[in-house]
Amino acid sequence: MPIIDKPLTSTLVLKYEDGLTPAGGPQIKQKSLNYVRPDADHGSLHEVAAALFSLSEKPLTAVILRDSTELVEEP
Image 1: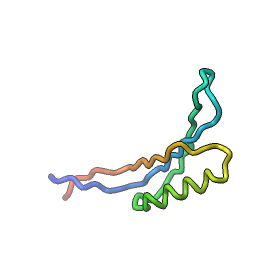
Image 2: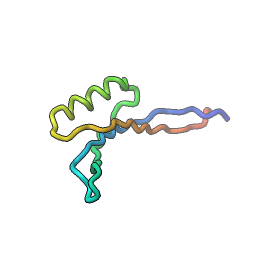
Image 3: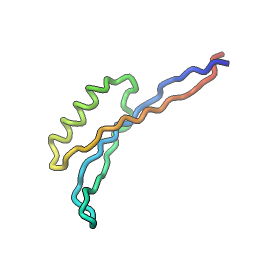
Image 4: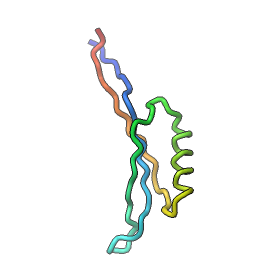
């Protein structure tokens, strides 16, 4: 049977620097924004992440989009 992919939800993960490790390298932390619409425009998501971190003292280092998809058999 053919399989259909059904987008469920997405999570936007924002990674940022938060000081230094004991070894002197950057310490990376992350914040997640759950329940992002799976059809949201990727460019707009990146702009939102950049705008949020423009209000913070911490520099944004990465924007990651994690998608969840259900795989169902076609009837």
